[in-house]
Amino acid sequence: MDALGARQSKALEVAWEQAREGLVLFSEERLTYLNPAAAAMLGVERERVMGRSLLLALRDHRLEVLCHLGGETLVEVRGRTLWAKADPAGYLLLWDKTQEKTRQEALEEASRTLAHEFRTPVAGMLSLLDALLEGLPQPEAKEALEMIRHEAQRLSRLVEDLPLNRLPSQERTFALNELQPRLERFLAPQMAEKGSWITWEIPHTVRANPDAVYQALLNLLENALKYGPPGEVKVVSEEVLPEAQPGLSSAPHLRLEVRDLGHPLPDYESLFRAGSRGVHAASVRGSGLGLALVRRLAGSWGGVAYGRTWEAGRSRGNAFGLTFPHLRTDAEKDVYSRQSGAVPR
Image (tube, rainbow, N blue to C red; front, side, top):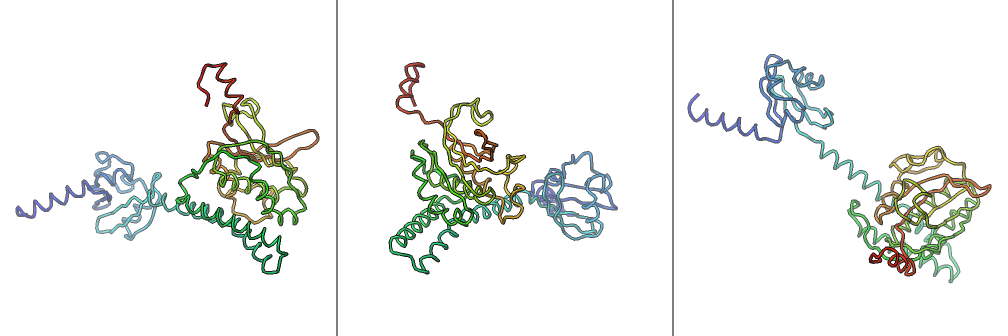
């Protein structure tokens, strides 16, 4: 080999040593070379596999067969997603697609999440528009148009919150009962169809994004109407000490719960995983994303979403709720300041 050829060969070797793509060379079914990228993808040490058989060196039968037959394929190898292309003449090329696959899965999950968050307001607006087309008396028509405007504004704010990995940030302090009229009007058709009604005991004030709380509470109420029995659904807010609800918070907090009279479920936590649905949901259409979204929204204001069995006297059922950091009243702040000498928050 002349001097020019030697320099080119050396340059090629240096290039493959620094390449992000993996290169494996073999001859007579034995490994003769693999670059650092290939060693990292395959999870092997170069010094220990040089000269060994392909099966022992690659430690994957599918890749060994690919080297014999040639072609290309996508394989999962020791926690990595690899695109592999081989030629029986003696080389195997590897590309690590793990991050690309993760991004694709995240995009698909974001798309499902976005579709779910849009589905409810769009369905509600369509039913209101149908009612308007059929002809509503003027006072009811004006109210329907106002509801459509509210939902369109909420959709607009939802779009502004994209991308979906950014949590809602438009927080303010507001009374929970601000949400009651909109939720009652919006859910009126479902309540009438199910023969259910909602009673409200929500005297508290919280700090969060009102749209996020509205969406979370709407999802919980829709679940209660879909999967719970006909009759009363309660929405209750109350202050809770840590020992009263262990595992959720180490400080006093406020909880907001939707309670129905359905038969208590055997497991609540698994229902908050995306795509998971309970035994009560077998005959009802749905994506299994509602509670996963509720948990995501609760996290945006520093809260937690949970499910539990509730009991009061002879009443018993399922409660799905949200927690909020405790807001001290002015009187509580003064007491706290005098007792601890701390600056009240």
